[in-house]
Image (tube, rainbow, N blue to C red; front, side):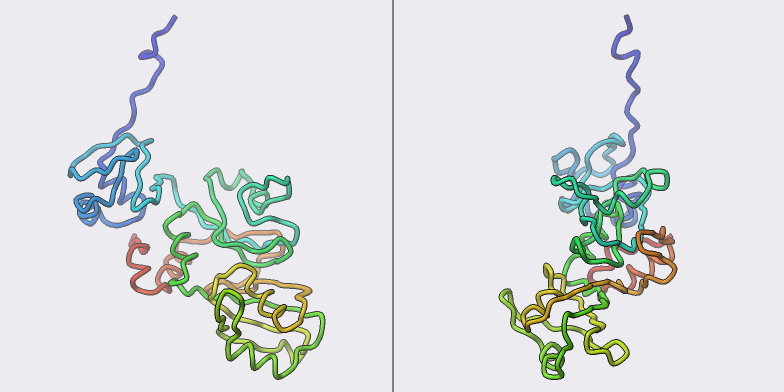
Length: 259
């Protein structure tokens, strides 16, 4: 019979500032400042001692965000109808993660923001928790472009009212732009950076329209070009650096890791 000590492997230890740097937060020198300021916790306990070594499998958090040593991956998915934008669904419906094969991604990724069950189009999925949090925050002002198809022709008056801003039950909503698609009053392109729940559908429902089809065709500088419905693209480091640089300076400062 073997003793536990004979079958267990010793934990792999790493300096705390190196772990923070490897997770893509900042340089080691800046990591030391975060540690001294009390922003870093290890297994739930704040650590302020420089030079601390921690086990590689320790739970390290920065302002509540879990820092991971696994390689960050970023997928741009063209979501089809009939998928839930969650990692799992208690009702047993298909989820967007079902579309990305484990053969290409063993990391625990999750969607950034949401698209309704019947809404199609661009969706970003990643295991980079800090970037996901910042992109989802209203201060990032990430613009999303949608192709909207209505059940009836929109009037000029309603077009102007949407452009000027509508007062919905949860506050005023303004769009970044609104145009007809090839002069067809049943189809529109709308650009918006507001991230409120079902905001596009609610804008038109407020004026008496039903949205028949809703397709997100743009997210930040990304488009659906060369990504068929139900397919995905693994984004390059250059594409992610560009995305981080497009964020406001006070947001991107924590995100942009120079290689």
